[in-house]
Image (cartoon, rainbow, N blue to C red; front, top):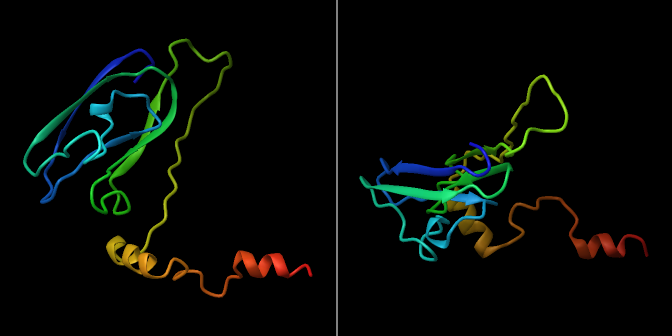
Length: 136
């Protein structure tokens, strides 16, 4: 995609629960932001939603689901918007690298543990208070 393009992206929900796509970092109209319950109702199973917006800036972004625990389960990807004008430098090729955490534990279970004990996964790591007192 290129800066200045008007994009139309049809998202067909083939899941068994509602889904959504949030265009992280892109300036889009509120109804196209993809945050269920805030600016958009979500996409029910078996339905299609058309996201339509003007790409007003260039850069490297990402999109991800804002529904249930779909993003930590893998509903995300990079999104590259080329600038309207060519780059003022030459290069042979580009690489896009996406880094992510992964756990064999279901994200809903992780979330539940963190809601009960925010430091649940901080095993054998000093807390901020211990770090501050270490220099005394």
